[in-house]
Length: 294
Image 1 (cartoon, rainbow, N blue to C red):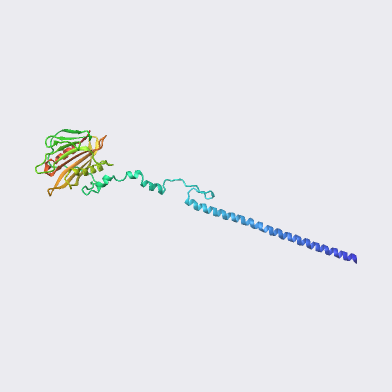
Image 2 (cartoon, one colour):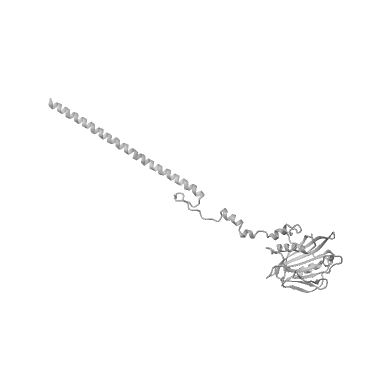
């Protein structure tokens, strides 16, 4: 019986021991499963995070590429400044105040003349000097005005040489009976600021000639045309000067030629003849057709 009991006890121990081993093995398997699950979970999560990061990184540079040309869509480095194209707002604003822009501004003297009610704007089209009434006086020779760089007719009888100052040359008609104003033919270097074109300079010079007409005189244009004085270019203006003397309205026929001389300021040849001496008006045509550059 003792043997039987011992065998039963051994068997029971074996069973208990096997159960313990089984529990241990089962516990190990559960532990391995538990450990593996987080690893597998991490393995799944890491690619998803990387994908999200990649997607985010691609989206941000793409937006930056619009605002900053040349930025690589996948670059994590700070964007380099875009190359200068020369079309920014700053240079264009600076160009407005640049010397080149200022150079295109209207000269103050010309701007003042354009606002002068005594002198209307020149006609836009070319108008030729018409033939004025009368018969041209005889000429003796040419007056060579070397100070101004031009030659002009020297009339023989009707006109008399006079002291040139403040001009370079001067000829005068005799004073008509009862008149306080007479014909005058003068030449000189242009006494006003030279403009960008001969036409504009002639316009200013014609306004200046009002200083040699009765007070309150105004101008209407009769001619505006380019001319040649020998080989030199020039511009001719014909005009009627309106004024009042002793309460009576009077006019003078006048013309001015501006000649582009080679080494000096442009030369002005100016002639004006009042209506009291209108038989000499055709002398204006003679003068304007005879001017030569020296």
